[in-house]
Structure formats: C-alpha cells, structure tokens
Picture (cartoon, rainbow, N blue to C red):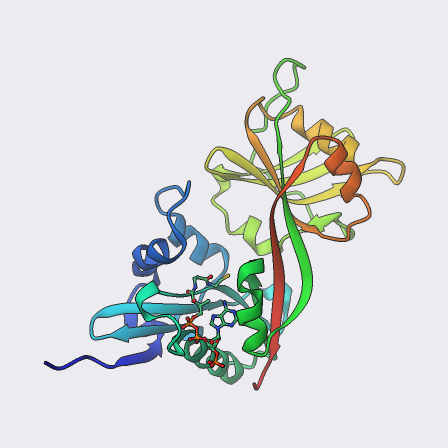
Length: 267
Ligand SMILES: CC(C)(COP(=O)(O)OP(=O)(O)OC[C@H]1O[C@@H](n2cnc3c(N)ncnc32)[C@H](O)[C@@H]1OP(=O)(O)O)[C@@H](O)C(=O)NCCC(=O)NCCS
C-alpha cells in the first residue's frame, strides 16, 4: 500500500480558503459560531492565499497557517490561525506551516508575522521563535437596556476614528464587517464601535468624549442601549489597562486571555 506524503503548499493551491472551515472546526470546535463564520473571519483578517500555507496529504488537508494583510499594522503580517488535525500533530507540521508562511511573508516584504496565542499554546509559539509582545483579555458583561427607555443599538454608521482610543482592535476588522452587522454608537460619555457576533455585541473600540468621564460610566451608558441578557464583549482589553479594575467592578468579568506573539523575518 502506498502512503501519501504530506506536502506543504501555498494557500492558492486550494482554490478557495473557505474550504478550510470543516478542518478548522475539527481542530478548534464549532462552538457557538454562526453559519459562514470562517469566510467572515478570512475577509476581516484580510487573509491572502499567497501568504498562507496548507498541509496536504493527497487530497486531504492536515493543517494550515493563515496570514493576512492589514494596512494599520504596517510591515507586520497578521496571522489568522494555525492548526493541525489531531492525528497529524507532533510531527513538525505546525512548524513547517509557520516556516512556509513566514517565507511567503518575507518575500512579500513583511518584517514580521504576528499571531494571537491562547495561554495553552504560548509555549509552542515561543518554541518557534516568537516573542510575546502584549497580553490581552476579553471581558464579558450584559446589556442593561430597554427599561431605561434608551433607543436600542441598530444604526450602522462610520464616524471618523479619534486619535486616542481606550482600546482598539485593528480598525479594518470593523470596516470589513458587513454594514448591517456593525454599529458606531454615541453615548453620554463617549462612543464605541460594535459588531454583532451571534447574539453578542463585540465592542472593538471605544473613546471617551471628555477627560472627566470614566470608562465604567461610558460602558454603563453603552450597556443601557443594549437589551438585558444580550452579551457585551470587550476586546482587546490590555491586561495592564489602568481602568481594568473599574470595569470589572462595574459588572464585567474576564472570559479569555491571549498573547500577541511576534516573530521577526527573515527567521
Ligand atoms: C499547536 C499546533 C499547531 C502545533 O502543531 P504540531 O504539528 O503538533 O507542532 P510541531 O510538531 O510542528 O511542533 C514543533 C515543536 O513544538 C513542540 N511542541 C508541540 N506542542 C507543544 C506545546 N503544546 N508546547 C510546547 N512545545 C510544543 C514539539 O515538541 C516540537 O518541538 P521539537 O521540534 O523541538 O521536537 C497543533 O498542535 C494544533 O493544531 N493544536 C490545536 C490548535 C491550536 O491550538 N492552534 C494554535 C492557535 S492558538
């Protein structure tokens, strides 16, 4: 019997990267994800087949490393996921995928690559020569709205980004979200940029309107515009943000921790 050898190929060999959804779900689980979640993720992250790597054994995908182009990150190529199917782990495929994608990014003129690592994967990334450049948290709270009579969040608008956000995901993530799934909301103490993620609203970015306002006041005002029981997620919150304690005291809890890890090119 002939056993097919695993080959690492460029993402363009796959035709459509959205075909990776089933493999991604087998590696990371489906969770609460909405139909079409993988295509949406690829669009948001600006993933380019020509910067990405896929591990193929015959016709079967065994793993992938996805890299995207995000103008606001300049010369850093942004990773949108690395995964290897369970049966093929521990044989160097993860490393080979990262190396292949790194070489593509270097050839395209990038100076480094960056991924988001969950705490349990951090050691693996450090073993591949990445360094942790930031620790980030996701916070979860809930809407307080309706009985206060505030209008609900519905509008899709695009106010100009201010210079000093309290936190901000890469701005392209909001801009590349379909217009009917995002909102820019003005409230008493500032404004926020939100996207719909299933039942939840994700607060990508927030700005205070006046120096005297506090982050917890802003978020209380925002939560009053969001229905009771609707999850409100804050991401990315820097783990050492000065206002973190106040936000936790006002009803948010930490639900996820992650590290931004970066590797210089050439590696
Ligand atoms: C993390 C993952 C991509 C690694 O792929 P892999 O093919 O199993 O990894 P490799 O075989 O290339 O590992 C390369 C090296 O890392 C080491 N390693 C593997 N898992 C590790 C871990 N959890 N912590 C530290 N080192 C690890 C290996 O021993 C190997 O070291 P060596 O070359 O010195 O022997 C894979 O296990 C996976 O898909 N896990 C689930 C999804 C995931 O968490 N993806 C990361 C996104 S947060």
